[in-house]
Length: 148
Image (tube, rainbow, N blue to C red; front, side, top):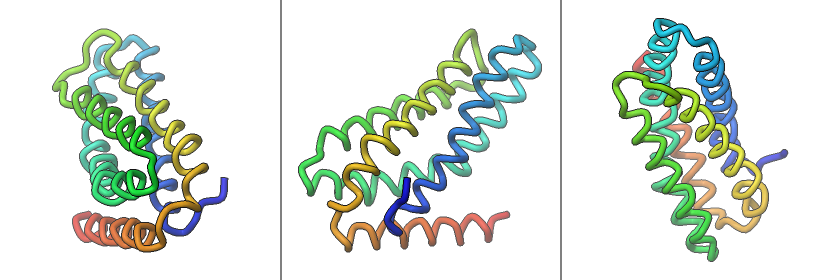
């Protein structure tokens, strides 16, 4: 799926999220408590480092732009998914099917954004909104590279 320039970085971030989701599902299938704990620790680190900044950009720039074009339901679904993912990653230690459930939710969230949000609305978003999204992504990447 070809993305307009303003959404390209957000869309690229989704690849990282899908890899993380797959790792969650694989760790949960392994059944080894130590491996599950290590995977969950990595998930929490990646969430703070990569997903939380991505969510912040979407919430600050994308969701208002969606609402401005009459797509409030899409914006609300994204907000709800973000809240559910934040709540799940807030668990300090994995329990039961928690890691697998997080992976499934993250995968479903990414696929929803790619298929039902980005694809159908990317050409309807205001150019200023797309420019703000691209600028926020660039700034976040610069800030992250300085911290490494």
